[in-house]
Length: 105
Image 1 (cartoon, rainbow, N blue to C red):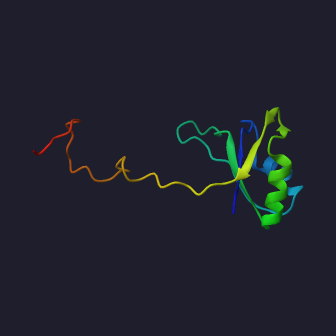
Image 2: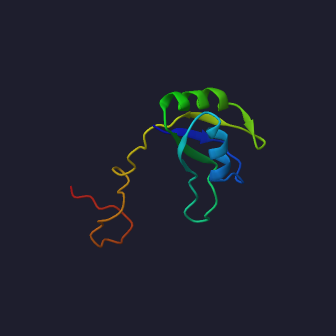
Image 3: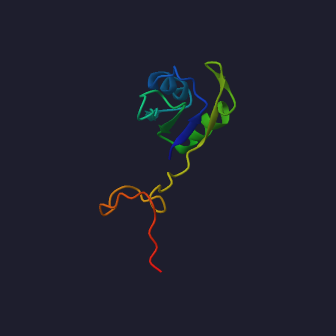
């Protein structure tokens, strides 16, 4: 189980976020994703806590709360969607480089 924390200040650190959530229980892990190209924080993060009751208490207390000048969006994280499938997802291609589509009628 994981908590999504959105609308974070770009200055927040994992230690900052951990300290806020520690007020509601034992924090197991904090993740602050960064942009692949710039290395800059993306404005959201994930927190895992030891007990579901602790997570529920943190969500209840912190959702909508102002922290570091921003109103936090805090809720249960949704499972990551599979991003493969219809967009090709890399690999393959067979060496074709024309950029157009060929149709075999």
